[in-house]
Amino acid sequence: MISRSIRYSLFLIFAVVGIVLRFWKLSHYPAIYTDEATHLEIARQLSLGHIQYFAVQDSWLLFARLPLFEYILAGLFVLFDVELIVVRGLTATCGLLTGLLLYVFLANVARDWRLPLVVFCLWNIFPQAVLYHRFGFSYNLLQPLIVLILWGLYHYHDQRSRRGLLLAVVGLTIGTLSDIIMWSFIPIILLATLNNWRDGVWAVPLSLLPLSFWAVSQLAAHPQAFLFDLSYTLARTGGGTLHDQLGLLVHNYTVLLGDTWWLIAIIGWVLLKNRTLQVVVGMLLLPLLLVGRTVPLYSLSAYYLIPFLPLVVVGVATFGVRSWDVLGHRFGRLTASGLMISLIGLPLGYTLHQDWQGLMQEQPTPIDRFLVDVDGAREAAQYIDDNVASGSLVVASAPVGWQIDTSIRVLEFQMAAVADGRDAVHIPGNLPATRWAYQTTLAEADYLVVDPLWRNWGAVHIPQVAAILSTLEEWERVHDSHDIEIYRNPHIR
Image (cartoon, rainbow, N blue to C red; front, side, top):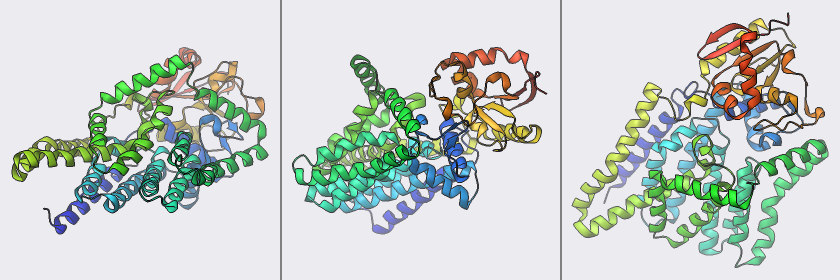
């Protein structure tokens, strides 16, 4: 039995470690991911009173963005400044809050003090959580909401507490205004109330109410834009034929089984002693079936798993605690402690060491070839601000474009790619002309800012981008730093 003073010490030590791993060097490491740059640009425009993402106006749903995260970020920009550290500080804070909520929840429902403590300690050093909390992804805002839903559904399932159901509904409704992935969690409320339809009568409509209000407000303000974007977004997330959906779902499942952490978590979920907790965790994993049939859950799309990471850590921690129990019963507590230190303690220590070394040495992430260097993007944006006249047109990726002065027109490179009417990955070629704040062509661009995102992702997935890159020899290169090149159109003076 570990004394309370030791438990409190471990809690404080890992809390500090979690803060350091998430906030140290946060302003420049890792490099910028395009999705966080999208949030930065939308929130920057929103702080100025515009519903706009570079050249596209009236709605963000085209880019799968919902209002909550953007308004929170825009409010922070008003209070502080438009900086990368602001969005990353927000998501890192959401990560720390998630760990605290997990601890408080499990301390209230678990029959064993070890589970909440192990979950809290592991969460603060869990590699996937640490990495994604350092990116400005809106999915990080969903993690504390998932814990609230878990908490509420637990008490509803265990005690038929309507307050618990209300807590779950509140967490869900907030999430549905932040990210489309949370729409896949709505059926959980219906599932939870199957045995008590009277609760379902108010809980299901209530979970849809804020989202419905937002949709109505968009229909009132920009009906054509909203309906176009909604249709496009639903088509993108439809998943293709049933055969395609099943194939992708099986592939995603196979990939997850190949991840050691997920495999251990699955075993841990099975070993959960608390039947109610086991059932509710299982319910919260069901949306993976809806998400996993439409998008890959690996490589660049692995961030779709961010909302599920708290459940993964609960599973891994449960595996550790239950293994300790089994070994203790079989070999005695002293021998079991030694085995647990060898089997779990050393791997966790190695995990912490790897986290620390990665941060100290700023080691590349698995997706670095698709990221844009923070200093390089800042230098490129500064060059444009210093050398380009107001009203000029610049084609750039989001990680550079959001930093360019708003007096200069910026066309994100996918927007330039659809100028001939062909689709890009995230923008349809038939986007109505009224949606463009400034509609123009590549030939009118004064400058191109080319970075690794163009080369390693754009040119691979969008033929039009590859075609643009093939014409660079006709442009004048005026800047080259941190693998970012700026080209001036020699035909425009």
